[in-house]
Length: 435
Image 1 (cartoon, rainbow, N blue to C red):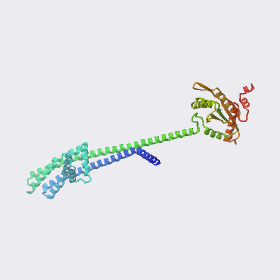
Image 2: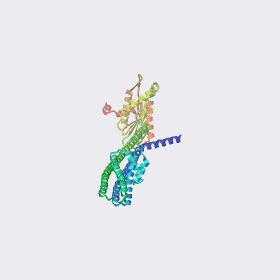
Image 3: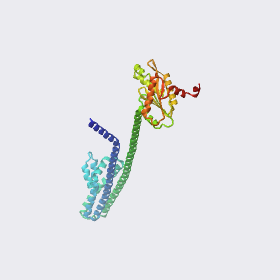
Image 4: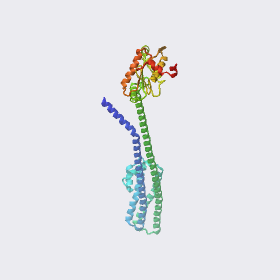
């Protein structure tokens, strides 16, 4: 059983830890995903920028080498023309493969490799074209790219025409040579216009994507920070609530340990602790100790039940607290026995307080189920002036005085070692004493 409980507790603790850290894990994973996505997008855009530069340069080189071949007839120039022309044609072939339905990824890969793109950049080029070709900047760039297709076809046909003419020797006709050279210049101008637009659009798109991804990463980072602050505050509040509850529970347990559960008065433990403290500090002024025992409590319990007895004890406890001084302590010592500690109280004042309590109880009537009960008490008093008096001695003397009060007929006050009538007369006001 112990092992099962321990395992269950560990499992609960593990789930609690997972619950606490899961928001942070989710945001960190999201941040990492966005960062990875950002790197992939930026890498693909960079590959397009590099590919555009190579595509544009190759088109111009193709025109340049074909023009030189036209004037020189050097076949090496024609070979360089073909090599340069193969780059934009490869890119064109790759674009066509990606525009097919379904997409021919392998053909696109071969076309981009023919276009001189780095093998590591090819997957990014394909991915960006397939999934982001409807993004405005990329859509416009592709439009500029596709606009050169007729020019590439014309340049390719033009090259074959020039080669077939030069196979019979140099072009002798000056007007023919001028026409061919002029058309090549026009093609170069058209290529340059579209290449510049292509480059401009890619640059603007690259900057826009960089700004957008930077903002997304900043927002995600701020979200993580805010979540951290919120979660930390939540943990702090939970800890504060736990500490408050723990403090309240400690106070409740401390109160229960020092108070009677029924009446709310101090219990015997708290009473004896307070009495010991007062005995340790007894000085010139004496310390009064009163023990009070109800006389008719057993009758109420036997005839009406314990619920009625509990009600009587609660009402008596409130009655005993009505005339007490601020620094006096009233306690329920057990059953129907109550005790009062009266610091700095002379025997006469203690007797006067005890007599007032006796009269209050005598005038009090307890009602239960249409029955009324008279309530009286036997009260024992002892006054201590000797610091050497022990707690046991003080309690024994007060208990003995209470017992003598019961023996003498109950409903009376008995002072330890002093005649009650003498004490009570001395405690009356001077006017009553003179009377």
